[in-house]
Length: 64
Image (cartoon, rainbow, N blue to C red; front, side, top):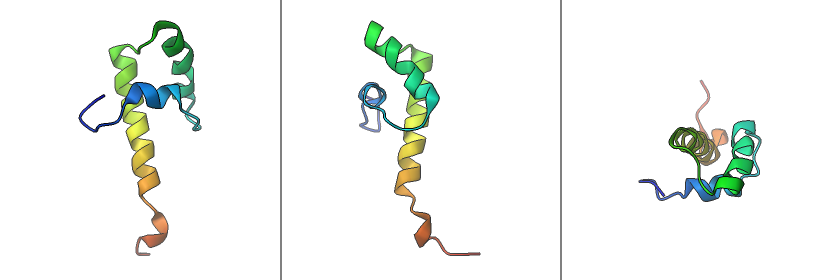
């Protein structure tokens, strides 16, 4: 777990989204039980980005 309170390892383990990089992390995570620090950092970045995108609902943004 990190400062955001999100368990990245569990998010990767249960990931069902479209990001192929995160899907490719699943077999290694299942085999070894954890991610390397670099894998963890990238997975965290991608998962947090997806969470932010889900929270941002563009239909409420003003049109320019």
